[in-house]
Image 1 (tube, rainbow, N blue to C red):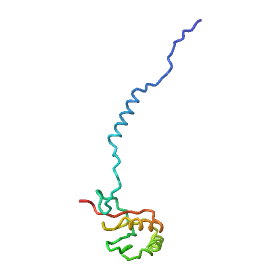
Image 2: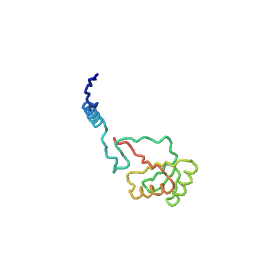
Image 3: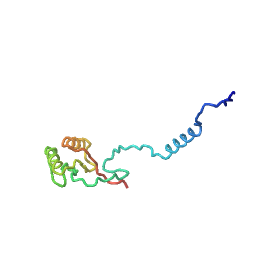
Image 4: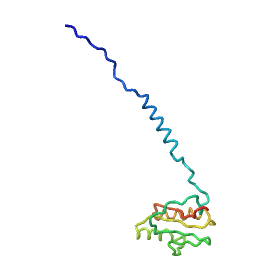
Length: 133
């Protein structure tokens, strides 16, 4: 007795609709994503938006327009700043520092204070500014 064999096609997956769905998702994410905006602002005391405030930072470095340096309202000489910050960070267990300065301070002064804070062990350094009106 002879059996009749049915010829079957090889199985395959239809991917045409899958490609359509992928393109639709790509277009959706491109349109709905927020494009990168420049983050560098040259006018340090004022900014277009307010940044998130850190929950509680106990170390605030303030440089007045006359050049006087304060850490939490205590006057500190520039030469003593690194040792004072290191001692305060060890005492508080916090390594977040906020910098406050007037618009008349020089960029070199800001960089010098930033370097001193990093040498003292600061891991987070923020700039406090006013919101632009």
